[in-house]
Image (cartoon, rainbow, N blue to C red; front, side, top):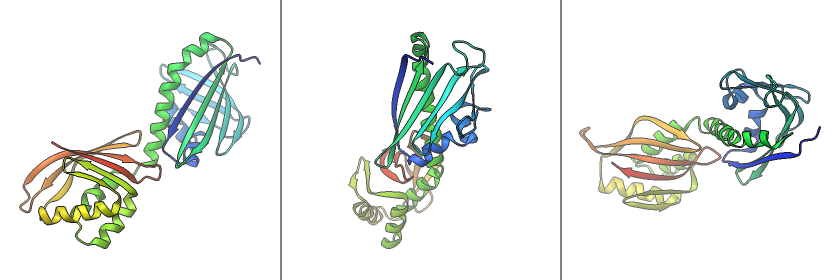
Length: 253
């Protein structure tokens, strides 16, 4: 089969390679980025089914599978247009990039028009893919956010340090109008200073956290001793591949 036209795309996802690869070998996870009803049989010769919007179905079969770094499958349209099953080939390679994963995608086509039609499609599809992976990695984002806010009322230095180690990277950064902090040690001391100068104030999350591509936004209120709200704002949390917080920027509102 001659496939002289090629589309290449590279994206980096802040997640472990094994987690990323699991979205190629588990039909439930495969469907999270392709669409309900999409399935994959993760064996060489196994059937690939992709359900696209508008009742468009793509079919193919697994040609090569080497966990956790390589997947190759044929790709074509059940209707036969713009090309039938087996008429193009998708190869995905995963390589470790520090704690993240670099994904290399190559889609080979029989003609240039088909290649051109799929450029934006793969931009879109790999964005869905990255979010599906990171939704799993950061499934406990709400708990991490709540633990972060609780830290500001924790007076015990040892307990505060242990909590920071669980939810934040050692080099975590914190920025707001009154803070320019790097590292858990400096952050713990900064929190203690806040307790001294603003005694009795606690931070409470308001509403649901919002997550996209490893960035989490959470609204908060600063509540005084008598339960009165004395300030509100939003925090932007940057999440790492291990699920811990790597940076926070706070906005007073």
